Image 1: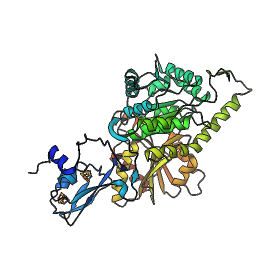
Image 2: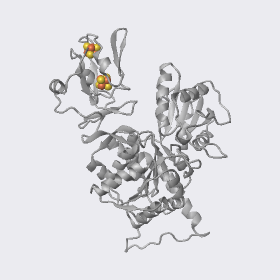
Image 3: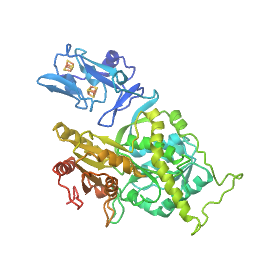
Length: 499
Ligand code: SF4
Ligand code: SF4
């Protein structure tokens, strides 16, 4: 029986001063993201001449990334390898060596000061807020968002931030406090979901109407009744026309980075709009994933200081806020708000490029996965995209031409870009995690609108799934792809997973 090398052996043989804790890379020089969403700083390379086919590496790889084919070691599956180096350590003939990702084509340089730590989506968002250190955070915890403001409260209590934390009695007051602070010139944030977002509804529209660049994470949750605390997108989708930018995130990493992206976009002088950063309640908000947290000083510098053009506390430039506008000016004010949304669509890629210089990630309107030559494409958002990617991988291996378009920016909606991406596809299925009662589901409606301009439109099918947190299974997604590949579309919505 083979024994795993002791820590002392590993230190001696690998030259490590300390064995990193599971999942923690404290000094990554370069990294590349793989299909699991993890970052690999080092890549194993097998010297086939030295290999004696003992299969120790296969047995010990925690990610099942090395396989034997016909009694011989096959290629390391880099889509799943996290670069932990265990295979290299257990190889008795030193046939596996670890190499920095930057040595390979496509390797991406990471900033020297970053660390990968296991975090929930909520804690990852709280980390981003800590690094931003806003002047004001108004807190009213509501499941499954609570972890964000609870963690932030600990940062305040422990002196990690200089934020004025306003503990309010309701979400209506939370948003009111943020609007007041924002109009006074402060950088203000809060977080919410579901009934909390519904309760702050009136002031959500005030925040955008007054052009407050508030950033608000939303841990998407179903709306009552019946009472349900689990994930769907009914809450933020209901608020889609209240004048907020909305960014949807698949992973905790995306949610962390999106907070900075949201801040940069919200405070741009041609935008000045509030932004929701959405993560799936309990799925992303509570599951622990590896999250790369960038250096505090670097991120704080990126966040910079808010520089409002007008603010209530500027006595030299006095302004009136919240004045009544009737037939005389209301229309013009609302048109300006729409213009700001158009600017947000134009400036979103620029904000992404600036953030990308630090993170190495890209921030397109949507991620295209397996879209080259795809006949059948699923369009969806947030964590359902992860399930879909796994199915795309499996079906692609079987030669099926399937792909995924994962939308990140839902408001403003990138109609032209979506149409361009889908124009060569035969059949498109749109997976919505909410209803728009009495109408087409929200994401489906927008995709349908996008395709109207095309002379040859793909076949289109609406699917509503996962309400109240019901799991979207890989078999559900496979079923959807089966229908799309078979060209079986209809004008009626379908409901994967519905009993
Ligand atoms: S580096 Fe780690 S994850 Fe990658 S193949 Fe080796 S043991 Fe598996
Ligand atoms: S552990 Fe080393 S010798 Fe054994 S199969 Fe893997 S690479 Fe070859």
